[in-house]
Amino acid sequence: MAVKKGANTVEPIRDIEKIKEIKKYLLHRSYRNYLLFTFGINSGLRISDILPLRVMDVKYTNYLIIKEKKTKNIRKTIINETLRREIDRYTRKMADSEYLFPSQKGERPISRIQAWQIIHTAAKACGVEGPIGTHTLRKTFGYHFYQKTKDVAMLQYIFGHSSPSITLRYIGINDEMVSKALEEFSL
Image (cartoon, rainbow, N blue to C red):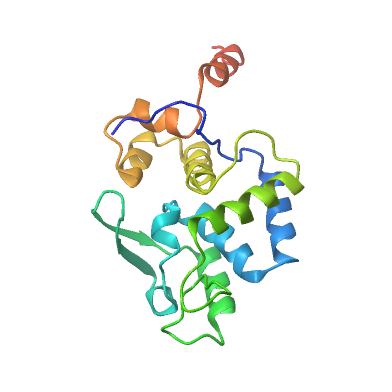
């Protein structure tokens, strides 16, 4: 599974302050949209696996078990404390059968395009540079997981990548960042 670089490549949000700013921006406009962003950056799931979720999929469990739409692999991921708190608050008055991210246009979840508009608009309003899209959420999760743990093997496993180099390139660890780290390193 190769990660392609091209015009449609999006970047992770590297700046924690920008993440907080986007959360605040979304929270003041729509709790659904705030949860979508929070869910994406805390789960590392693809948007295609997040949008069809229903309340019952996340409300009564500490683990989310899904069949990934892209790979058809079964994936089990923990619902961390931050995400659990937000899910509980958000779903308090929702029926178990409701979509977690319902469209206002009927009995279906928001579309991938609508999710892109939500994320793109919020990022732009908060001054986030670079190409931003729905995949930014997954890449942001990966980037910050790696920055915190430095465990590329674990992240490779989480993402289902075939090599560490693919994972590093995927989360935006580039030659410039490596050069800067080496420049600051000495014994």
